[in-house]
Amino acid sequence: MVSYNQDDALPVLDAVSTSVSYIFRVLKAVSSVSPNAIIQLSTDGLKVSVENSHTVQAHAFLNKTLFTSYTFTPPSRNRRRVIPSESYASTQASQEEDDETISFSVSMKSLVNCFQIFGSEQEGTGQKSATRSYAESNEGGGMMTAFLGGSTVCKLRYDGTGSPFIVMFDEGGVTTTCDLQTSEYDDSISDILLEADAIGTKIIMKANYLNDAFRELESTDSETVMVKSTLTPPTFVLISRGELGSVEYKYTRDRNVIETFASEESVQNVYNFKLLMSASDAIKLATKISWRTDEDGVTSIQCMCDVGDGRQTFIDFRYLPIYDEYEERTQRAQTAARSQITQSTRRSGDDLFSGSDDENNHSSD
Image (cartoon, rainbow, N blue to C red):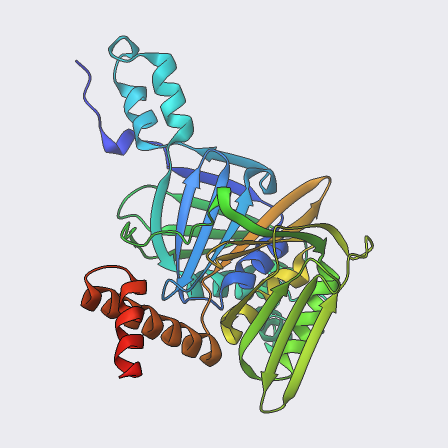
């Protein structure tokens, strides 16, 4: 019998990518939600998830097509390397490995900082990375300048439970390594789920039009945003009211703006303003947006981002609704009314009509 030796194990993740700047922008687009993240590894790529008080969640999918090489080796496959294959049903084991995932927690802030400082320059903003600024101000800083002087290669490695998540940047033979401490994934945190069989509203639209709306909404500094979808024009409305003013952004079924609109009835939901605005950076990256809301008001804003060469990656924000004061008062009034009806029914011992007759007879006296 051959025993399993962990020292002989392959790393769980061994990946290489030249899309360093793009990976940085995707990670940064979800980093405002939480300072910590859960990374899930699978044969399809990496899923980076963040959440805030189970009110908003964001999931960034880094598909394996973003990497020039991507190898995922779950522990079960490592064990198969050293244990005779006769002891396994090979086909079944292979299928289980394809579905297997490995998850761990890591500091989102540290991960983003690694990419921002060592592996990326903030393109299109006129701002330079901290590393570039340091290189230009550092007298004789040739080593750092050489590091940034061409295309950067990023390597990701994870060896398993208890191991650090290693991010390496290589530029012209100069390598910088970031070891990020990991912890076990807390499986008590559950995903905010959309009821797939109860989607009340589905909208697919061009991202730049939603980006315009979010930019206008931010100017109000509001506490809430009301989202309406109606069967009559305007079909999609975003409303924000704050101390600095109010904004109503309305969309009609213009095919140049909204490609798909499906709603079974007119609905409206209210969301936390700051949490909803956390999707702004992801919307700026996207080319198309899928906005879905189920019957409970749970909303998904899924951003499709083009990487180039026919490749896409997705960033998905999930939100739970809140209720404004008017809706709370209405609900309290409805609850009180139902309570009175229940008490009246219990007093009569029969139906409401018998109670009404007794009251009429008493008033006539």
